[in-house]
Amino acid sequence: MARLTYYNQNTHSVIIQGVSIRDFYEGEDVIAWEPQGDLITATRGLDRNAISVGSGRPGALTLRLKPTSRSIIFLQELAEIGGNFRLVGALVTTGVEDVLALIDAAVEDMGFQTGGPTMQARVFKLTAANYTLTETIA
Image 1 (tube, helix red, strand yellow):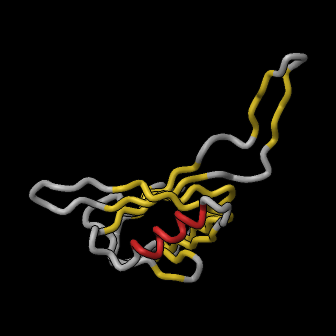
Image 2 (image 1 turned 45 degrees about the horizontal axis):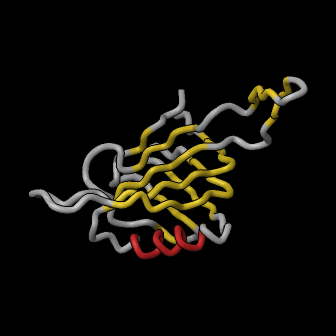
């Protein structure tokens, strides 16, 4: 069974373009993975129905960082470059040695909320055209 959410920040790593991401927010769901859609979709044109077969396995990785994280500037730069069609690779390793590899991912800065009695998470989303998930079986 696949694990969809990785949240133990003491036993995981996230590496994007060879850079280790640091200073994750506290609590659960600081790193969340969600496969996106099916590989095959039905479409209807003016003349007839058609089938679109995707060659990738799309998905989205959401990262929640502390607002003081040293990784924010790096991720912001990747998000800005993404507007120029630069795609990145990412590797997530969980505490139980499952490995999620994102291929051709675009980085998006989801912003943050200000104010309140506690600091709010800074959220970034990587949407990948393709991924592989290797689960470790003990």
